[in-house]
Amino acid sequence: MQRRRMTYAAVVATLVLVASVGGAAANQAAGVLTTTGSAEIAVVPDQATVVVGVSVLSETAASAQAQVASHMEGIRRALESFEIPDKSIRTRDFRVGPEYEYREGQQVLRGYRATHDLYITIDAIDELGAVLDAVVSAGASDVREIRFGTTRASELQRQALTAAVRDAYEKAEALAAGAGITTLRINRIQDQTGYVAPIREEVRTMAVKAAFDSFGTEIAPGEITVRANVQVEFLFW
Image (tube, rainbow, N blue to C red; front, side, top):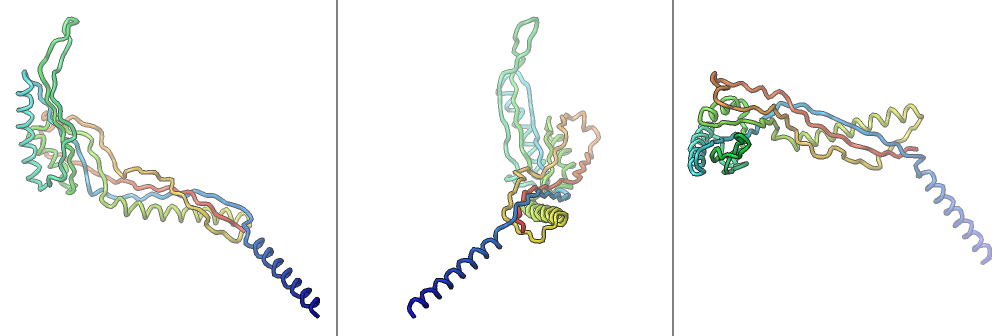
């Protein structure tokens, strides 16, 4: 009687083991399918940045620096008139030094040049043209690196990533349908976008006053594009 019970227990154990192995085999994926997805979201920019500079050549370093300081004071007053806060204005470069030229093979001192560049962020993008006119009128000798961006960059990037994953999934479904695969499951998702700031940069321009004789500069921001790229790995059965 005891032997029969032991045999019965062994049979049950064997059946359980077979069932477990069979279940594992059923759950094991037949293969791996990998696709990439991409998405782009175009948006009208709501922010602009620009570098505004003053450069003066004078006989002495003190004179050059004083003239630059005077122009900068006027530029700051112009920016204040557009209610651009101090936190949106920062010095990008400031330097004072001798400047030379060559005459008949000899290095000759021309004078001393002082340069002060401001990096300005403008949230009221529709006023950008008027701001540029105002700073040039106030003494800016150089306006360059006009860039358009968006304050919604993080939000739009997440939306683009969602759309990129959806694109990858739709590609995988199309491949699976062609191959007769009925079951897909996402195994891994990798963001391959990297960091690319959603900006559009204008061509550098020298903003000497002669170029602004007719004030009323119009700047067309156009659109900027937020992009996302992903790689998705699927298991299939």
